[in-house]
Image (cartoon, rainbow, N blue to C red):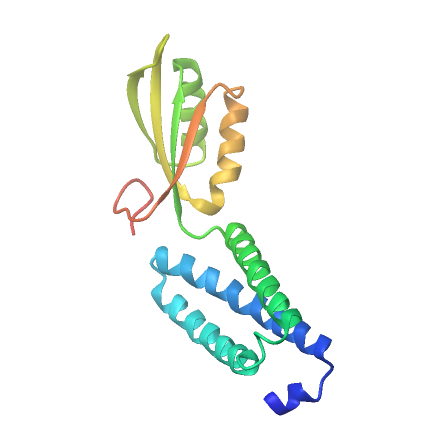
Length: 180
C-alpha cells in the first residue's frame, strides 16, 4: 500500500487519506450509536470494518504525519467530516425509541387521545396541575423514526396548544403494542 501511495502525487494521497478517514469515522459514529441502542452484532461488524480502514490509513501515514502538515490537515478534516456525516446519517435512520411527554389542557388532551386511538397508538394520561390551570400529562412511547411525524400531527390536531418533551428510551418492556 505504501509503495502504491509513494507513486501518487502528494495532493492525491491527502485526498485518499481524507476520504478514508471520513468513511472510518462515519462508521465509528454509527457503530457507537448501535452499541448504545443494543444492536451489538451490527456494531461488531461495523467495528471490524472501522478497524480495518483505520489500520490501512494509520499504517500509510504514521511515518510522515508530523512532517507533512497538509496530510495532517486532511487527516483532521476527514475526522471532523466523518463525525458530522455519521451523526447526520444516524439522525436520518433514527435508531431506537422515543418517549413523548405531552402536557395539555382538557380540550387538547381529548383531541390528542382521539388522534392516538385513530392511529392505534398506546398512551397513558395523568391528571396534573400547571401554574394557572388543570393540565394533563400524556406519555407515548414510539419508534424514534416516527417521532417527527407524530409531533407534527399532534401539534396540528390541538392547534399547537401542547408542551412536548421528547427523550430517548434505552430499554422498555411490555405496553400496548410495544412488546419487545
